[in-house]
Structure formats: C-alpha cells, structure tokens
Image (cartoon, rainbow, N blue to C red; front, top):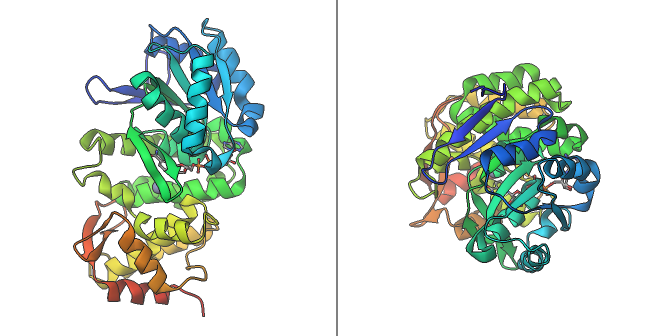
Length: 369
Ligand SMILES: NC(=O)c1ccc[n+]([C@@H]2O[C@H](COP(=O)([O-])OP(=O)(O)OC[C@H]3O[C@@H](n4cnc5c(N)ncnc54)[C@H](O)[C@@H]3O)[C@@H](O)[C@H]2O)c1
Ligand SMILES: [Zn+2]
C-alpha cells in the first residue's frame, strides 16, 4: 500500500511484534525520519555495518539518523560471513556498552544478510533484547533475510546454530543501493526472487522472464517492483507461521534442502542463491518424476536460470555425499529426506519425503560427465 507520505509499505501483523517494511528508491536518507515515526521513544542508536558498506552508505545513513537528533555511534564488523560468529556478537555487546545503549535504544543494521543476522542476533540478547532496524543493502537481504525475525551466528560445527527469533521494529529497503552490488550478488538474489515466483506469484516469475536484463543491471525501477512483490509474499508467510513451526513457512525452503548441502560441501564457494537454484532444479526433476509438475514447467524454470547466467548443474561432488549431508540436515525426518516439491509456477508447493534412490538418481543426472 502507499502511505500518506506517498511511500510504499506493507506491515507484518504479529500483535505487539508488528512492524512496517518500506521499499522505495532514496529511502536511505529518510531512515532517520522513519525511525522517529515508528519508534517515537528511542533515545540512542548505533549503526552496525562492515567497512565496505560503511564507505558506500554509512555517511548518508549517519546523517539521516543524526538529522532527527539520534546521533548514532558506528560499530564496524568484518565483511560477509566472517562476521557471523559468537566472538563478534560478544565484541559487539562490548561496543553497545561503550555507546551506552540502554533498553530503549535501537540497533540499525546496515548491510547484507551477514550483517543483518549478526546485528539482529546481538540485539536479541543485549540487555534481554533491544530493537533492531534493518536497512538491507543486498538483493538477498531486501527480499528475504531482513524480514521475518530469524537471526543467527555460526558455530564451528555448523551454520546458524546459535540464534533467536527477533522481529525487527522496522525494515527500510532502498533498491537504489543495489547499484553498487557485484553482478554475482545480483544474480544470486534473483535466484531467491524466482523461488518466490514459483511458490506463489506467477506474475513475479513473468517479470523476471520478461525483464531479466533490466533486473541484472539492477535497474532501480524494475528492482523496486520485484522487491515489493517479494516482500509482500514473505510478509504473508511470516504472519501465518512466525516461528516456522507449522510447516507453512516450509514453502520458502523450496530449493534449500539440496542448496544447504551444496553450500556446506563447497565451503561457501557458491553464493546462497546460486546453491538454491541448483536445489530448485533438483526438486523440480523429483516433482516431475512423481507426477506433481509437468515437464514444460520444469524446463521453463531451467531456461530462466540459464538466461540469468545461473548454473543449473551440480558441481564436482558425489551424489552419495550430498544425500548423506541432507540426512544430517534437520529436514530429514523418519528415514527419508523431505523436499519442498513444486506443483506449478505460482502454485503452492508440497512437502514430501523422497526415497534416497530417487534423490540419488536425479542428482546423478544433474552431474557433468
Ligand atoms: N535471517 C534470515 O532469514 C536469512 C535468510 C537468508 C539468508 N540469511 C543469511 O544471509 C547471509 C548472506 O547474506 P547476503 O547474501 O546478503 O551476503 P553478505 O551479507 O555476505 O553480503 C555479500 C557481499 O556484498 C557486499 N555488499 C553488501 N551490500 C552491498 C552494496 N550495496 N554494494 C556493494 N557491496 C555490497 C558485502 O560487503 C559482502 O561482501 C548468510 O549468512 C545467510 O545465512 C539469513
Ligand atoms: Zn534462502
């Protein structure tokens, strides 16, 4: 919807944890005003970001928040996945104390999913929880990770093993910030966008098919439209199943069963979106074999991924190793691995156990040589 101030926004309705998500070009400079409007009682603030992102957008955000008399401190954390550790969460708590943040303060996460997850997690435990505002700067963060309240850091034994549900108080996504994103990050984010199209929005899928070039160029107008659609979809899933316990949010895991295994086995040599694209192709082939989706709708997805320059074949790995890793993942229950299987483009997928033999066969067909 468009607000009185002419801004597009949607709300996630979760009782006292409800919050607005704004998506518009030029929003970065309005973050201060949005914080004041949404959280009138805030006393202090700190921006958590990485050096690269701080160089690009830190100054504008700091000025915007300073402009509403909330002169923020800045805490720098390492760039990318490295930030997501217990040690960096602990270090950040020390900085929050130095900045004298209290229970009425707000943490502003400026960055991609890595910064957002670390800042959100640390905010969830600092003084038993302070509010966090997400200012996502990657496509993946704007359409996915900044929304929904999942926060986590990694443990040496695995990804996202230390975490909490902590809904943000506000999300302000400015698609203009994506102009500086490396092309590979754009493509990876488009993987998540296509996922949302397949599981619930045929129009969105069509937009990527028809105007993929503009999206790959991070055209702000085109991006704004796609991101708004994605945010609306994700918001509705979160409302239905806030803590991902009813199986409703499971649809969002389309492509993620194999995707996570690929990420783990390639030690993050694949970006998240790249890994789930391969996962979606595998799930589609499995669904086709099970008579859940027609071949043309599988090929339509494969064609789109190829047009976007996304790999759809499995890199040099053993099918048996992948199956083993998927069994270890929490989605394997009662012997068989459960997959989110598509039933069409823009149609609700289904969650089904799939026998190992079928999974192995499909994976082997997706390998080169
Ligand atoms: N909480 C959730 O619900 C959720 C959902 C999906 C993924 N995640 C997490 O998100 C993380 C991945 O996030 P990501 O893909 O955003 O990667 P990222 O946060 O690691 O950022 C990727 C790179 O892009 C750079 N960057 C960020 N914004 C930029 C900009 N505007 N211009 C130029 N460079 C920029 C960063 O410095 C970094 O090097 C993973 O840790 C994953 O577990 C969380
Ligand atoms: Zn994902």
